[in-house]
Image (cartoon, rainbow, N blue to C red; front, side):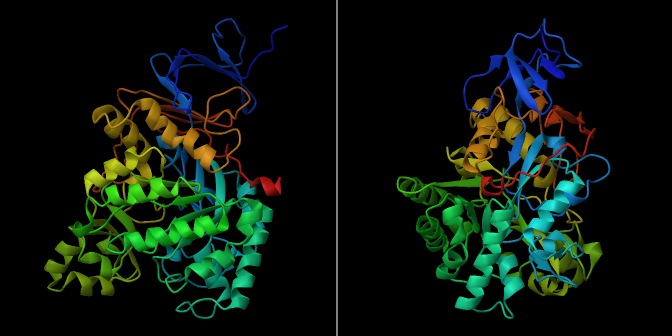
Length: 482
């Protein structure tokens, strides 16, 4: 007797996420799993989805997000992640996680990139429980932020944590790992953690070793001192004996353009003795809090939000400063707290880093910015369209691998990232000829084209950019918690 499947995605060409050549296959789904692959034309199904002439691939995994709060409240209308084919996100990057931290007021920057009204979680497990109850639009695997732990446990952030404070933070991390956190992130570049030294990070991160968690690192510097910062990051990962991810690897400032040749050689050499990989986004402009020190190294700076002057959002800081008869640095101080986009990177470096075999794709999008960087809405279609199809930087199979199978392997997301029997049915159907990012710096929330359908855990979650089911995701807890 032939079992009736819940869904068959038929007529498409499967790129399975492993980097293997594409194949003509139907995909049969029962519940939240892929149960059959092949010619399923004679197999009964409750529903069939026609993918003729389209690519069928694993749902994309956004390995670098700040979606901690976005996951709790599904937005109305198009979803910034579902609309571009993302089915799983890694949250809590750059040292910033929504838990464990309770605050009555606003947190110090850059924690305020997650907003100001949701800092209510004394325990990381409480946050994960709330996330499960909210039934998020996409799957989520969550990191604990080192900066969040510092804000929780220290009375002053301009010093190295004491031994006692380090023990408290390590205990917080251990409890979070037991509840299901997948690892820890750092943001040594930012004020809340700038005073921390490598010994502090290793002491706080000590529970990662036994739990075999992961550490993602926003390095201390991505400009003139990048070699020292990279050396420090690699040493921390090596000492802990765990997987290290170098976050949004890039070179900022004209004096450093081209130095990706040097940094990638260092990463390649380190990879022969430790497990190391990296992520990047496919743009030559970055975005974070508005920092006066970043202005001089940038060709332009665009304000993404400002509490002091909301009208500045979306405008060039340089043009606004000329209009107001002041310096960009002085204006930046007057706009605080605020966020910005910095045009300080070189396209050759972006392409070289993106092409590197161990590089995964992460958007680093900031969902709560008034005028966000377009990477929030366009990252994954941009890799497929601009870099793979139009520029030929790598084959489409490689592009998909960097956004699926590679990411699932590095982050130990069992059953995700590959179209295979018994894997979870996270699937994206797209048109290889038309897939493209539509979001620009002037129109940053435009919905990408060519993403025809997105299935999360076997449910149709998005079709032609329109959200269909914003509660199909799961919380992917660390194996220690399962």
